[in-house]
Image 1: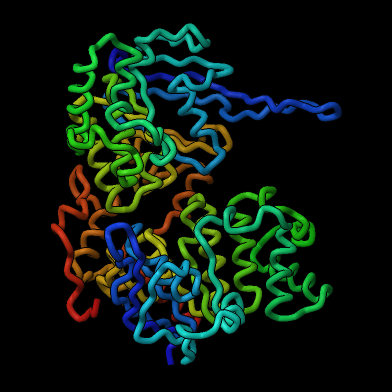
Image 2 (image 1 turned 30 degrees about the vertical axis):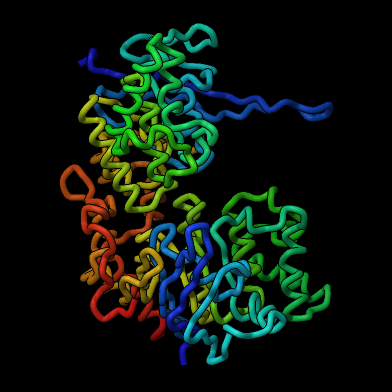
Amino acid sequence: MALLQIDNLTVEFETATGWFRAVDGVSISVEKAEVLAIVGESGSGKSVAMLAVMGLLPWTAKITADRMLFEGRDIQNISPAERRKLIGKDIAMIFQEPVASLNPCFTVGFQIEEVLSIHLGLDAKARRARAIELFSQVGLPNPEERLNHFPHQMSGGQCQRVMIAIAIACNPKLLIADEPTTALDVTIQKQILDLIMALQAKNGMGLIMITHDMGVVAETADRVVVQYKGRKMEEADVLSLFESPKSNYTKALLAALPENATGDRLTTVSAFFDGNPEPAPGVSA
Amino acid sequence: MTDNTMLEVRNIKRDYELPGGLFKPKKIIHAVKGVSFKLERGKTLAIVGESGCGKSTLARMLTFIDEPTGGDLLIDNKKVDTRPGHLTQDMRQKVQIVFQNPYGSLNPRQKIGDVLGEPLAINTDMSAAERRDRASEMLTKVGLGPEHYNRYPHMFSGGQRQRIAIARALMMNPKLLVLDEPVSALDLSVQAQVLNLLADLQDEFNLTYVFISHDLSVVRYIADEVMVMYFGEAVEYGTREEVFSDPKHDYTRTLFKATPKADIESIRARIAKKKAAAAA
């Protein structure tokens, strides 16, 4: 049984010119302890699909799916109260902007203890001990002192570590990382990716890595889903995706990497195809 | 040889003073601690480093936005008097800058035509009709069309906005273009288009680029010379081949190691390692 299974997910938003389809019939499944990367450029619907899973989209969005199952349990039609029990505990998410996703009015200690008290019902002493343990697990120096710091007193990399600590506080079964390193420097990116991958291996979490960086995909993923304009273009394991991409869009993306440049100009995606690219054979878009 | 030097920087420094309080002594931050380099006409120098290493401060000094606290700046073999009020208009026209965030660097209430016409209105006595012609011409050059003349910035995508920012920088026919992370806010496919545009423009106008970036794969593609900065100092400086094949400083090596590799051999190695760890 897959950890997370989504069949034929469609998300639409109403605009002045009619319904806009942000996600168009995408099916995704993640196994236990598997790392799935979802790649695509901005506007490809990769974040929106995951926000729909988390139930974080505004009520104006129209979400339809044949099935949305987490550990065989339906998460499409559950009550908000049920969802709150699940989200943050069994499914956790890390967002792109670490500094913006923490509340600037509270200390980071308060924010991590909030999760521990709501989901695990720990008392004050146990919460504090667990928070210190988590902070040292994510490699924050002086964890006890750090608890009393506000987000603005830390760098972007440190804030992202706090976000990761909050996300893994309840040992989630599935972690969704939405561009966790895009706002960070390369050296910090390496540290954060290493940290996420070490935690994933240690806790046996399922991990969905949303990114637009092919380098990050190559360094982390077991399996890759390529999305373009809300549709799934290709799904393959990481090695065959890089070795023998099937869809034209994936080929174009790989050719646009500066390290794959031949001659003195880069191949652009639009040079590869005009209009809507076809999904790879065998992929139900 | 010497007359081909576009830009020379000798031991340039910039200190920022943090004002002290009643009981707090004032503090001096050395943002750039004496950097020197020489750049030939039509070449590209890439400056690499993490945030806070002083690379943007250096860009601000090269474009006369910030005044250096020490050292010399020579453009076209002429020493530039960077004191406020001493800059000649001629000098200002030679150097232009493109900023990182195309969403923040364009005035949301200004039409694109006016964005491009403004430098001409300020610096030259061209007529409005002439400015309009020049702006439309430039729009075509950067891959947009004259029909975009009357639109506002919010009607454009990130890549198109960066094209507009590049077009604005080129309106004064500069010799030297400072590009402060011009593609880091853009998607991979759009990044490729903007990098190609920059290469085309360099060929056409014989432009000299100072290209600031933290993405080594982009640097490797675009640069002739590379300088790595770390805590305000240039720790590595050489041609692209020298720096990439034989990095001398520890920090450069760390940087290379940290850059994600997207080639098939490294993916194979990673998967093999993971399998071994799972079996153990």
